[in-house]
Length: 339
Image (cartoon, rainbow, N blue to C red; front, side, top):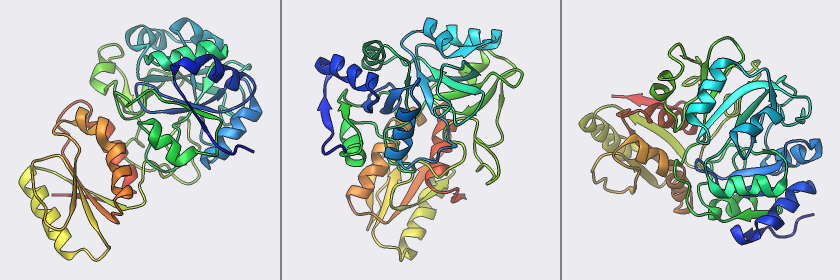
C-alpha cells in the first residue's frame, strides 16, 4: 500500500524510470497535461492505473514513446496517412490510433486491436520513457472525470497516496490533452481536438473528417476507440454551464443567470473583459489558445474557492476553439446556452 506519493524532479529521473520498470506508477509532465504513467507491456500496471484513477476499464490508454522511430515498437501496418502525420507533427501533442502489436498489454488498449500512440515533445516526458526503457501507457493524472492536471500540485491533490511518485515539471504549455486521429478505418478521422488543430491536420491529410461524437456524447452501448469519448470528463465539483455567443449577449445572459441563481456561490470563467457583481471571476484568456492553456486550472481553482455554480463565457474565435468547446461541453455535461 502506498502511504505517501514522492515528489520528484528531473534529478530523480533514473529513480522514476526504475519505478516504472518494477510495475509502479509515476505521474509526469507533458506539453499537454500531466500523465499517469506505467509500463505499456504490463497488464498488472495497467490495472493499477485504472484503480488509481477510478477509471472504467473499457476506456483505453495512450502509449507514449520517446521518438518517432519507437512507434513501431507499439504499432504495426502503419498507413501512409499515419506516416505523413507522424513526420509533420511528432514529437508534439498528437496521438494516432494505429494497429496494435501483441506486445502491448490488452489492459492498456481495453481489449481493442488498435493502440493510441504519441511521442510527446516535453523533454522530461521523453527522458522518463528512456529511463524506463519501455513505452509508457499514460492517461491524464487525475481522478476520473475531474479536470485534467496541468501542474504537479493538481496531481498531488488527486493522487497523493494512490501512486508512487510525481515528477514536478512546472506548468503544461498546451493545457488540454493531445489531438487524437484514427488512421485505421480508412483515411483519417479526428476523434479528439487538441493543440494540433483540424486546420493544421488538413494541410497534411486533406480528406480528414471529424467524428460525430466530438461535440456529442457517445451512446451508452458504444465502445470508445480512444480516450475521453464516452465518460464524464473535465468536470469540477461545481455545476458548469457554457454561455456561447457574442460578447454583449453572453454577458447579458450571465448577469441574468447570476441574479436568478439559487445554487450557492457563483463563478464566471471570463473570455471578455467584464465585471460580474456577486461572482468569483477567473480570466480564461481572450483567445482560444489562452483559454485552452488556462481552462483546467481555472475549473480546479473554482473548486478550491468553494464555488457551486460556474458560468463559462465562450466564443470559438481561432483554431483551438474546437478543442476548448469539446472540453467545456463535457465539463458542463453538455449544458450549453447559445445566445
